[in-house]
Length: 240
Ligand SMILES: Nc1ncnc2c1ncn2[C@@H]1O[C@H](COP(=O)(O)OP(=O)(O)OP(=O)(O)O)[C@@H](O)[C@H]1O
Image (cartoon, rainbow, N blue to C red; front, top):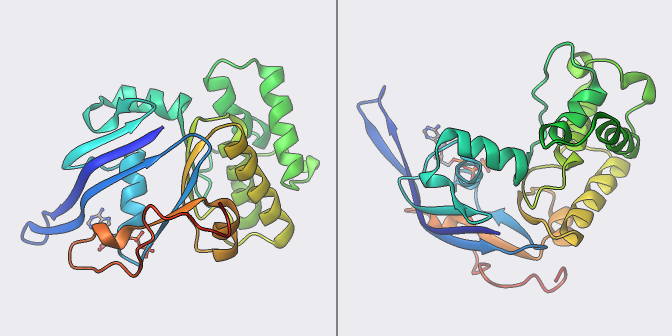
């Protein structure tokens, strides 16, 4: 479902004498339907850069990044937008708040974007907001003024509204309380059970052990940084 072959990334700092930073070299990995893979590795290894490349925010210098068979490295921006709408979800811990849009519509929007009717989309949104313990009195308000934790949970509800076949999760359980962390882990397990291919960054080790089938140490693709383990391709015995 998600397939990277020989992907490399360098940044050129034009405002600093065109210094070139080689961040990732020759990344190849495959994540199948129903599988959750954790990206690990030291700070600066390139985990976020890799996620941003898969989401099409950063363009790779070389190689192929196929999501559902489409190579994002070769895709036009409108094709990337279509893949994001239909195939590839992204859940971070931060909500990009849109002023004046009620929370219910913020969460229902990804479903409306793929043609789901208003009632059905709102029903699913209500279900998720209730599951994530957002009080009903807040559903008709814009999340602009919500607390950090409330915004994070609205973002998670939004990210899980449409059943994407592929998902990227960037620290989805960071700074959640135990009850909401448990809800998010269940949503990840449900997504796997319906066949989603998932790649995530989880600093929460217990969460990683529970939901991830495999870890990939990104350091092994980082020029000048040696890998701390031989985790690639090995299954996490406790979680598999
Ligand atoms: N837009 C950018 N321009 C220039 N360099 C960048 C850019 N984004 C990332 N880098 C560099 O790429 C390297 C990898 O950064 P990245 O954020 O991907 O690491 P990470 O493994 O996610 O780290 P952390 O665990 O600390 O979040 C760093 O050396 C960083 O300075």
